[in-house]
Figure 1 (cartoon, rainbow, N blue to C red):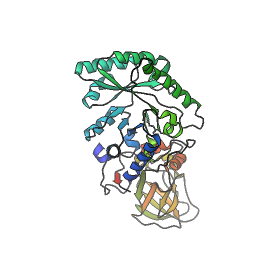
Figure 2: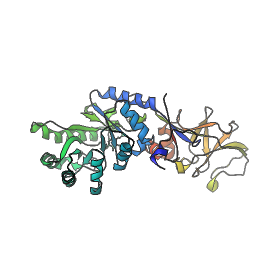
Figure 3: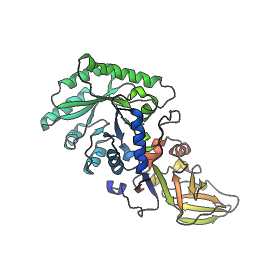
Figure 4: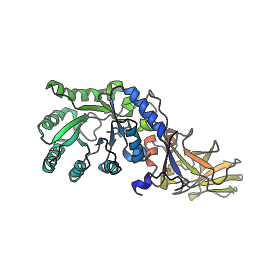
Length: 377
Ligand SMILES: *Cc1c(COP(=O)(O)O)cnc(C)c1O
């Protein structure tokens, strides 16, 4: 599907849809902003805005005062530019040399994790007659991308010599800021602060310094620095079960469908592939048009619940690619009744527990076959 259908606001496309509450999104952004005082807010909208739909979400966050956007991939940033979004966009991921001109053409900010990449970018910018806007990436304990904190000085030094780059920022990323024990996160912050003394020592103005993801924002106020990078918290979900809930946010997304079929299932007639479920008495069962082909995990088979008319009912048998079956027992439901898969009191956390994963994956896994519908309040 194209980005346009991802962001369809036509709620007749399919009875199965994701509803996104833009007012709640704005309230979450304000709550975060209040909590971080003067720090700038870079709204993280990678992975289709954590499943919420990248273009409408990014546009609304900018309208509501987010200072900039963060994405993982060049392609995500290009989608935002093509939609007419002009706010600064930082691409977090590692870059391929071939991609560099595209960054410049789209006025995007590059992450520079090594001397080698710095030189490639400086050379390419010189050749194209542009100034590359970059953020240096320091690895303080994640071992993903970034120059190690203990070798970072040479990257900072080299960046001062480059003619065709502007170092707008310098950043790092926490590996354990959601834990109850913040020892490792504090160590990472110390290492980062130590790297940044480079500028002070030379009486140079420091670029924008940032390290805090949602967990850092919630648990380590001293990590807010010049800018924070909330992702999951914007969407009203807390990063982990151990993490402090020091900012009141609420979920923005609900995932709904409608009853497509009703029947009575008799004893001795197992339900769905591999016949993993059967009843010893007649039960009322409805079929709902959602499945693992939409990102409703197959691991939810015989584990998840859904809400119909305010009542919770279990998903029975295997989740199929496009359909699930729900046991009403003696309850009642009619074709066309709303079915809440995620939302109400079914949280991304609860669904993650059923499926044996984390809320991040629950949200980002809802794929583009499911239309997104936007509303206020
Ligand atoms: C994904 C990401 C974030 C946001 O993380 P959350 O835990 O969702 O807040 C921030 N910074 C970087 C570099 C990221 O990759």
